[in-house]
Length: 87
Image (cartoon, rainbow, N blue to C red; front, side, top):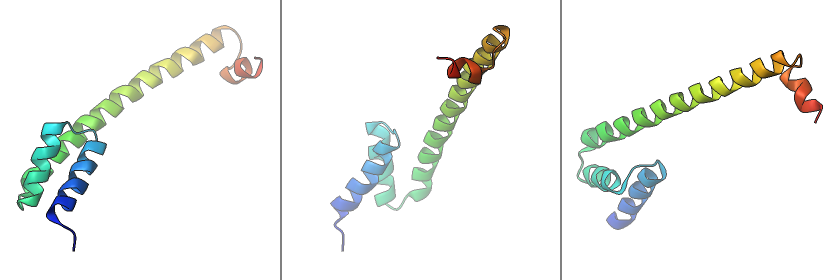
């Protein structure tokens, strides 16, 4: 059977890998090990929401750049594919 410290390390590492800061990783891990999973889930869901907001923001930035690349390629009379192919 796994030791409590092993379980702590696994949970903590997973939260750290997900980008949680030290304080959040420690707090969530302690809540989970104390059986307070609903409180831990609330913190985890909050982190997930922030990550998704960041993804959406970054996707909008990529979309803006794609549009600019398309527009510039069109104004040169070339498609993006043609301008890449001609390099």
